[in-house]
Length: 273
Image (cartoon, rainbow, N blue to C red):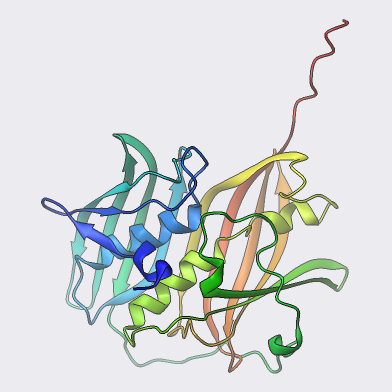
């Protein structure tokens, strides 16, 4: 079994509780994308298969230990004929790390839009950059990530191309979980890049505080996908990033929004004073 698929699997406990494994290095901060994906995996285990995820909203409350497992407690908030809602709490050693609400619905006919007329480049022609910064918790040998930073109408834009490089099952949920996992990587970084800073430089206190996603269509994780990111606003030490997840066919498969901390670090006191 691939490391990536193993990371996104959860083990059933008593009642509606599940556990997800940790991923390297112990004592380091847990990767937020893994918490989101595992929480969605746990919630999905309590919903009928014909209802697929339509949206999720997760608040990060505390940092977790990357090397330790995380427990997920699912509350069945609502079950209707075509829709369902779940609340999920993520805990580690009894400490609440994150809380989320997630909605599911059966597909229904209706008007559709969200097609990009042309793609900005062929990802195969780009260098294999990997993530925009260190990502020790991610199995990067099973992911192909290529990042292009630029501007559009004077605004900073990050284009993150990605695909899984390991064999995947046909199950649509697995592809959605991989997308949630991958697209969290340094997603708040564009809010700093607007000002010439980055999470990699550690010039600011930074980290995701809130993550939301809306799923419009199916995602194929082992084909090229484009995550196109912009930061429309920042203030009070926090920034917001909006992103479109676009399939290789130009169809917008999901919309993502993150809020994150981008606060200036306090100056180190001068001991001579």
